[in-house]
Figure (cartoon, rainbow, N blue to C red):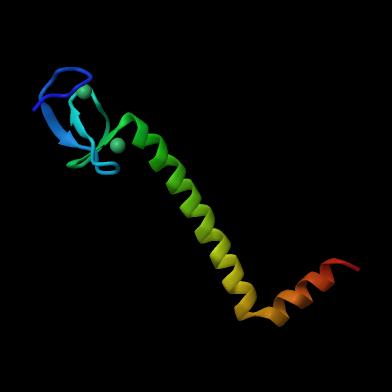
Length: 79
Ligand SMILES: [Zn+2]
Ligand SMILES: [Zn+2]
């Protein structure tokens, strides 16, 4: 099988979208995993979003676990 874009042999499959990739199509490899040009961008976004979500979630958990402490702390900061 050959890549439609480059007419090269398929050597990998994008781990994100499942597209068949020739060596010219592969934008990034991570160990044995390969990603196409389009998906490298998605992965970058996703990693950043996930990190932000985790930080937000941890922040909320802290507030839930210690609501009084958090409230008092805020009150002290605002005279
Ligand atoms: Zn892809
Ligand atoms: Zn290709």
